[in-house]
Length: 267
Ligand SMILES: Cc1cc2nc3c(=O)[nH]c(=O)nc-3n(C[C@H](O)[C@H](O)[C@H](O)COP(=O)(O)OP(=O)(O)OC[C@H]3O[C@@H](n4cnc5c(N)ncnc54)[C@H](O)[C@@H]3O)c2cc1C
Image (cartoon, rainbow, N blue to C red; front, side):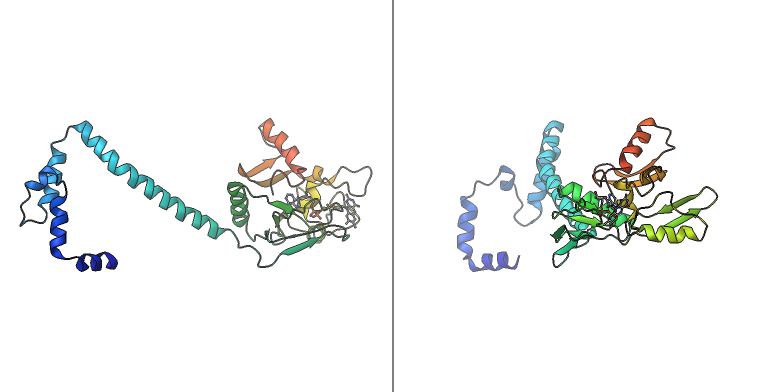
């Protein structure tokens, strides 16, 4: 703005007048009251009032459409900025994750550890929108490094709470990042334990279930068989509450599949 003002002042007045007169001035300009600085706009508004309704609509579209598009783009830009802010920043250095036996390793800058369900949802939604890969990782015990992905990983190490225990129905609700050992500790106080266990108890409950760990008892069902309900944060469908008791057969089928998804259907 300051630049414009000083540019006008730098041009000789005579020059401005020449340019002004050389312009093809619209008819209503000739009717202007030179003393009244607003007469030009009044002329415009009278011209608009005399237009046919069709011409008025066409004119409004001609003016309004670019304004609407520009406003929409600005709103979209700020909305994306806002969404970006809700995604935790990348690690300043590459995070290296190694499996328990040290046979597999991966390094990535996109290693996320959300602390709330909302953070996890926002992260998964962001990965979906931006088309970036995000693989859930548990305790990294799998000998084949199944959960490792240099393009991005999400660990639920901070979502590790035992939420409730219902001794009467022998049910426990835990966050997927809770380790098996924590769950056993919480159950012990109620004289309960898990039906099937492996020879090591460091797994996240999420990883333990998602690989359908066979545990140790040949006559016992794999651990996913003990799951009666689960919450799954998916990329495209948001957060799903799935359960064995669902009235909808399609939901029950999805529940069975999602229990052993190897981290590919959601977190
Ligand atoms: C020394 C040792 C002894 C073992 N003994 C036994 C045994 O006796 N019996 C047995 O059955 N197994 C055994 N295992 C295997 C072990 O139980 C599995 O590798 C383990 O269950 C994987 O759990 P994790 O948390 O380490 O998952 P990870 O290895 O980190 O991940 C495994 C899979 O689960 C997915 N995943 C992890 N967390 C989530 C989540 N929150 N949401 C969605 N997907 C997720 C990952 O994407 C990946 O596909 C043993 C492993 C070791 C190292």
